[in-house]
Image (cartoon, one colour):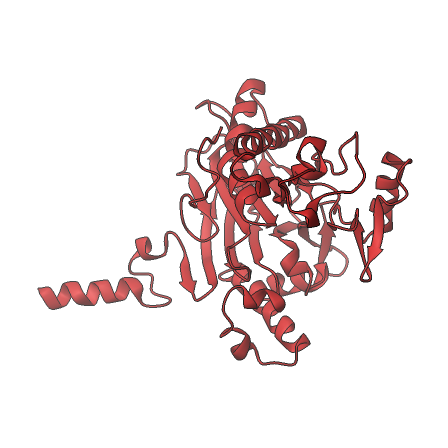
Length: 388
């Protein structure tokens, strides 16, 4: 009897085994790589993967499928969030803890999903983090220099809402009727000043500041510091009260400013999903640094659904290794922190769309899904004290 129990437990943890669903419910880990190869959401299937490069994982992510409201009778659907932190993990962790809860609250108030609901959720998250910075400023002033990109996708009643701050990216794979190939359609607007349109927008908002965007070491940067023009956090570039000691000198802007240098206003798009829309790739900039939209879509389309997110991450790592003239197997041996010299944290969520489920989800009573990148319910952080 004891030997039978031991064999069963071995089956639970054997790679690829389906004998014990609980063993894979929170995904699996392989060194700095975490992955959930296959899961079910209200509108189809999903795959999720994260690889760490920074000393502390600055990317955070989540998928929530089920109720999008605090009311039992409210809208149902699928929520995806990818939060690419910079300067530390505090802001991305805060977003992961709060943004979806704000969205549920505003959905309940409006009793429907909309771009305005998502915009309010972003605003409430920004205001909450600002309040946290104010409370922690006397003891932890450097938190004023921590920020995060924020990419959100919501599927509800056949509509896909995509909201973005920063340079993470959402790409739709759509079947081309004429060719039979799957086309890559970017759904998110990127707010990185490497694009001339972003530089022009910033310059138009700050006509009296000729140094709002400068070229530094062949890279365009806002005030010579940061590459993105929109974010959550980075309050030292939004509120002049934090642009002073004891914040480190390298973060402080020399000239006083009256209006925020960075914005927290997301760009939001709405897409009515069609049968030809097959999947969406949500990923942090770490992936797109190595793969084009079409390359990523082709990889997802030409392989099995299972493990698609992990496959994208592995391909990006192989390219990163090749750029440095090293083998992928050697790159895998490099520890976090040092790994950042070769690639950034990378987060990928691939959401497959089942046409038959797109419009049934609002009334479906299937079980809910709540999963965070890394497979934990909540990541500990020093910002927890006094969270709003």
